[in-house]
Length: 276
Image 1 (spheres, rainbow, N blue to C red):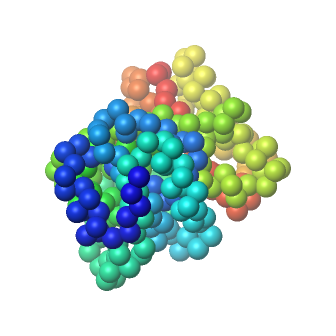
Image 2 (cartoon, helix red, strand yellow):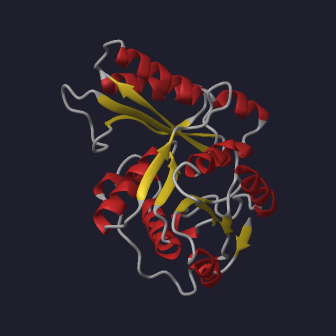
Image 3 (tube, one colour):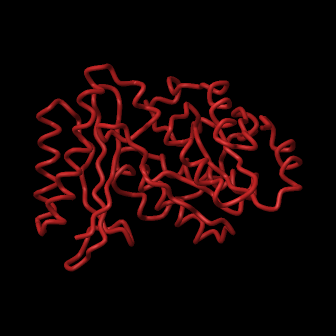
């Protein structure tokens, strides 16, 4: 496996590759990230994982400075998982000048996480566009835990005509149902025990809707109240359609329930597909 730090070296390394799959990450990898690499191996011959903590997608007061940088451990895990190239640029390599040119995300980004993380999706689409231009992958693999991010990236590819197939991979979970996340490492032991409450509330909404309930707003409100009563700070619990990430209309059946909430200093997100 090759560890590459510069754009010029990466382009030279990939020039001879005919089938490239990109797995973008911010590092501090867990089994969920490695499942993306496993999926990537089904779609191409050269697997490139990027590791870059992207300042542009962190809102003011976010955890950019404390986000763990674990490159050596990440590289060992990626090599074992079958990755061929790790692209780990520093900030000046990817942003040699202040990034004044930034892409505007679609309207679907101006809700849910977009309401609570100003500038986040602008930073996401800008860095992903740069990675697409640098790596020139045929396929890129993203996790479905960041459901809204995946939706926004699919829109980026469609609207900017990138010749990149986007593959979404199901959320990898701990045995108790907690979605794997790099930020789970921030949790205290007590918070880790409590953290599964978010998934359990979403699962209850899913089960009730699939059992025939249609009072979507009430179900989401009940979940928010349960989290708040347990000491969480809730950003949102919301139901959307899968086709447009919009509030579902009468008769729509392919839905997704999404939640984001803070336990202590850690923001957790999760989602579940629903067939109503």
